Length: 157
Image (cartoon, rainbow, N blue to C red; front, side):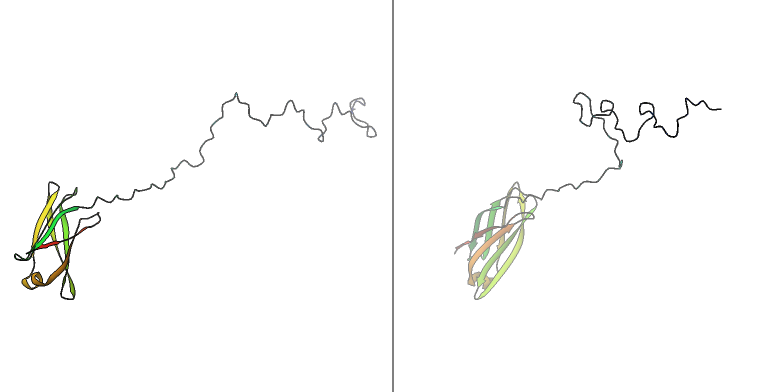
């Protein structure tokens, strides 16, 4: 038979010191403090995604090379020849474009000149009819990746 001293009486309330009450709050001295202790070192968290994420790499815009410099551009009407000379830092060839007026028409002739040791020079021969009528001559020298260098042509007899 059960001992009456250990069995609670249905009409009496149980002793709160012996039975845990769910409505009571825990003792604040035993709960962890939400503030971070400056003496403890932070624990690194494991990475969620182990695969590397591709990042966008900015590609620099190609820098323009300095334009070639036209030292001389002369047209000798008696020989019908255009002579062009200048300097550049590029290698390979430069493109020379000659623009002139012949009567009312504007004409353009172009040719390539090789670069040797940072210098270029070349000659171009016009037709006899164009050489007689040519006015307002100008030369434009360019190479890949640069601005064109323009110069008006001096005309000699």
